[in-house]
Length: 479
Image (cartoon, rainbow, N blue to C red; front, top):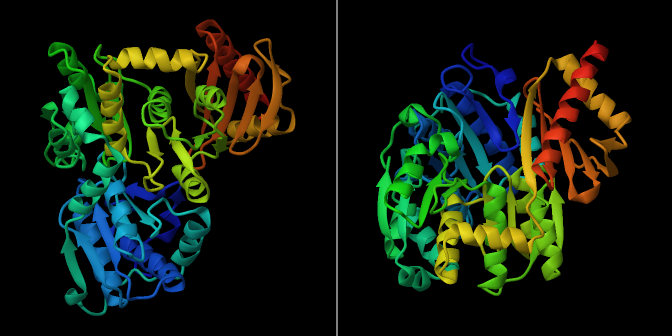
């Protein structure tokens, strides 16, 4: 192993490996991880199937992708690399459509500009399951970071993944219905891979469109490619100024959505999931299971019960939702962090499709989005109120907290009885009155995330205060 490579720094999280460019995310480490992925490919695919490679708009992402292509070609694989930066759902769709041996995607998603990442997407077009990523991780230690021994450029070709993806997306949307609504839409690309995709779909769907930040900027305008409130100030202003029907955005690799209603409210992913689940049932006559992660709103459970649909709860990470989508008919699957997929689509989250489905819902109903939100919440016996606490603790304090809640979970929180304790992912306290609390320790930093949902703002405050207080007390027992 060369001095420039350090495999101890290569840590795979819930969705691949991310690191800081020029610190741990280096060309030698990319070669090493690519060879580890190739070792897995040897066990799962024949070499008559191409490996696809794509990348987002980050600094050097295209060069990292080209490096991986050379390594794979040197190992005897045929490689098809995208002709420009590309959304994750687009390369995922093509991984299945082109009968590939899967795809490598170079992205750090919504992370800040100094980060890059790599994830492997199998040919079923969804996130790699833990069995696959565990195998890849086990291969890393013995993988070489050396330069390829040859330069087999003939085995590497470029391709445009857009036409086939767009053709497929249009089969999932009622384009004529959206056209007839003549929606006024504002779109903030946030310098992401969705530019040239989402705006093209919006134009094809007859919207009156204004777009922002539709060029590559490796610094993301000094912000983050994350479609949340603080990054969408300009989009909110544009929606309000021109009385638009809708504001849309995506994250860096376009697998997460950002939605602004006609009043300029940035909708939470929980709210969008609820609106779209109802839209698919009510307006499009679709049926199937609703799948959500442990950290996602239980309003989806209420809606599922109302329509007699199965509800499944998974661990955090879209790979678990994708797995369920491959096992059974899923109407909609999603997570509170802003990813979703729907019936008929690939088992991968897709911000482009999510954004368009919101436009479609408005077109079907002929009502403002804020009204659709209120109707969906009322139908699901809401509202419920959510909060997330990010508690930065020492490692010993973090361990003490998880230890205490695992061995001696409370019987009540802020006077609300605990009905059940779940351990699917972290520790989840299912309370009476539809409330719940989830504690999830970070696997990579001294941090415990506490997710809360209750049926009143007052209770939310009380539960949050009690959780913070009880966690603070455990510092004394931390060794």
